[in-house]
Length: 293
Figure (cartoon, helix red, strand yellow):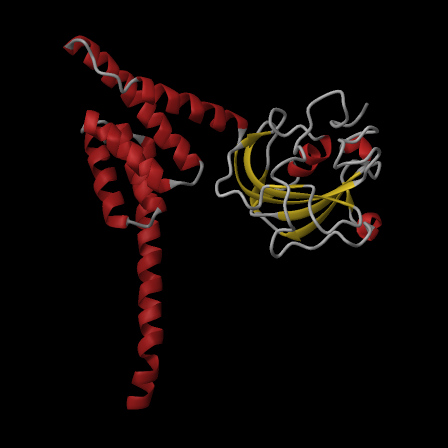
C-alpha cells in the first residue's frame, strides 16, 4: 500500500486521549474539503494537497529531521479535531520516519520552513488507509491537518546533539585519580566545544556562549573556546565581549584565518551599528534643530 497508515504499521499522530476541542484561532473543519481542488498538489496524484496559511523562513525541513510541531487533525464536516497537541504545555522533538510515520505528513513537512503554518488534506492512501483507525477514524477517510513548525534540527545535528549531551552527563562523574581527571577534562572539553558549535549552527548563541565559557573553565587559553564565545557574542550584538574573546584567541593563534576573518566581520558589524546609531540620533534631534532655526 502506498500510504503510511492503516492496520499494517504504526501511524502518527494517533487519535487518542490528547484529542480535544478545536484550538483557539484555528479554522474549523465543519465545511467540506472544498478547497481540495485549488490547493497545491504535492504528491502529483492529488493525495497530498497543501494550503500555506503563514509563510516560514530559512531552509525547508530536511529528511530525517527532528521537529517541534503543533498539529490538529480533522475529519470532514467535523469541527473538533480527532487528535491535537495544541494544549500540551511542552512539545517534545519528533523525528521524521520514526515518531512521524503518517506518509502524508512526512511529505507535507518536508515542504515546510520554521515558523510556517499550513493546512493539508490527505486521501486515505496517504493517511489511515482503507481500514481507518477505529473508533475515531472511519475506513477510507480523507483527513485534514493543520500544522505549525515551531523549530527543527537536521538529522546530523540532532543526532550529534543528543549524543554529545549524553556524553557530557557521563563525563560528570567523580574521578578516582588525577590522571583520570585529566582524561575526563580532555574529553569534556571536546564535548563542550562541539556543543557550542552545534548551538551556533542552530542559531542559539546564548547556549553556545554558555558551553564555550564552560570549556574555558577547563582551559582558559583554548583558542577554539575563545573563538566560539566570540562568535556567540557577535551573534547577540555584544560587540565589546565579542572583541575581548576574539582578541584573546588571536593572541594565542595570531595567524588563524577564521579568527582574523571573524575580527574583520566584527569590525564591519560594529561600524554599521554605529552608523545606524548616528542616523537615529540625527533623526531624533532634527525637529529640535529645525525649530530652533
